[in-house]
Length: 359
Image (tube, rainbow, N blue to C red; front, side, top):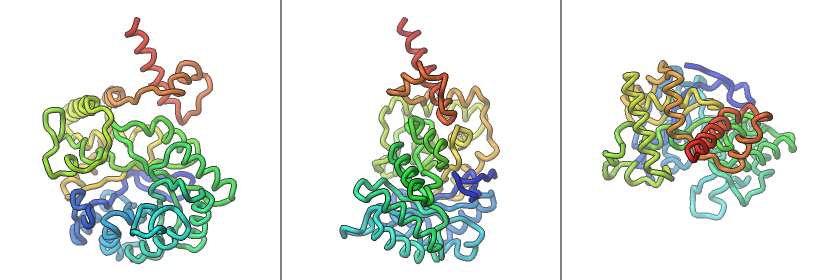
């Protein structure tokens, strides 16, 4: 397992992090998973044996019950692992039962600590942007939690590029700790993070941690253009992820299956190996319902794709060159930020290739 500092911090985090959205399976989360404490201990032991040192959850997962299962499963080895959880999503019906305000965060941190059976959170995520609460209020609250010893670091999740930049720069102007990481969705098919989030994070010193790298089950190899998701499964009934172009999704899966056949590995291992080596990616959150799923995912640790195989996956899922990126790719490659160079090179190749086809 590879370890490296997460963002602008000294906290060493494993390349693979174990996510616990599958724990508990209550309060509407039954389609995601229903892992109980005993099975959670088994999965956690497997992850730790493979070198995973961080476990990610959220207060909204099973409305707090995922935190309870994780807390029960790790409380006797708490000093050996890192625990991440989240705040922001609605946890009740009251007007202050949601958001990134001081009142909501202060309520929720104590509730999460109690459920997790711990005195501190190693990384506390703001789960979504809050367009009502002033950024200064959220930043100041996170600073107070750090000073109180309730959290070690904080991060943001599912922000846009401008929201990330505003948050970081506000923290710097206040002299407060900035978020050290962002948690974002990124797969061989879902590539929108390349437009701004990945290069912005790298440039601002905010590490990128990827959630749902298998597209919430779409990129497992069990679904393709000829095999729809089975009724009653998460892929059939869950509203996420949003697929903009279904035909493009099938094309990506076709290439993933082709590469998997070439290397003699599973499609999930190919996906994880590809993501692991992408620019500006720090860690990947694995989610597994069963020991077999987790074992297969961890098998990606020793898989390295050839440059040609990685390029085929990159090309088939490459996002469209939108403005101003296509303009910069054509006219501004002489002075690019290194964090965005590889993405702009792809846009330039796509635009020039399109021109040649038009000719």
